[in-house]
Image (cartoon, rainbow, N blue to C red):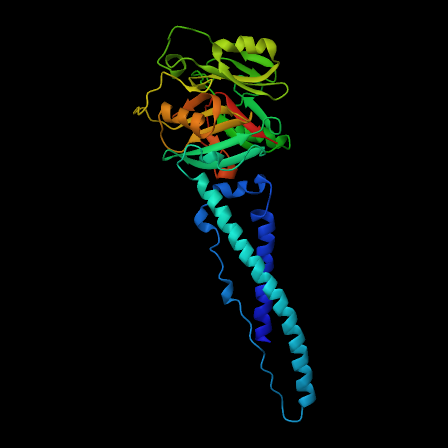
Length: 359
């Protein structure tokens, strides 16, 4: 019976591969592929050599005088052997087909790690409502979260807001008490020593801090020195905006703004990099920012290593295809995003504005 067991083990394994293929490699929806975008591609299965799947005739011997039993066993074996052979041949074909699809899938995934500036567009992501992905752009590592604001709940928090929320832990506790889940959190704008926003802050339609349009330079902050600064806002119908601060009053007149935070400097302005930035600058820091891509998705980014303003802006412009992007913070930049193994709620004390995605 050991030979039969080997055949059945092969059939079970092959069947498992077939399910795997249906759920991933053969999926038409790009959303089925997004889980692979953060995988080490070295862990993808190597192609299977189907020539190693073999079967041999079963040798049956019986005591002398039991020829009837011997004939019966051989007929039963022959019938089962033929049935298993047919199943096994089908499995071989399915495994071979899966091998080809795995190779194709691995090619797609590898393209996402390419240093080519268009690597994030190696596949069509327009239909994805929620995409966390680690990417390498010009040899620097970034964590990116692309969110459809019409399908995901985006919120802002600050100590100036009701309840006084200035860290990820307190926000998470509030959401848990409401039966909600914190999917993502990131600090979202310049703030003063008392943690109040440096400029505009609107929460749920209520203006808690007026827009800051000061022309003088009261400090050495990037908010003032690398103009223009800007505003990230979402209106009542969940349309996102990133505009220069001086353009926000006009936007506010024609749009019913629900949430807004002011920060700076602007990284990308109408498709162009802020002219105050210097290519090759030695001013390196961990940085985070937000952009809006050509599909109208909100793109949150944090660098996983120190970068300068120019290369951070190039990522938004060339890698993520954002027409406008806003710098949110540096040095103390924080991101909570479990899907990319950023699971710590600690070390986020004393932040100013915080932006979240929750459900």
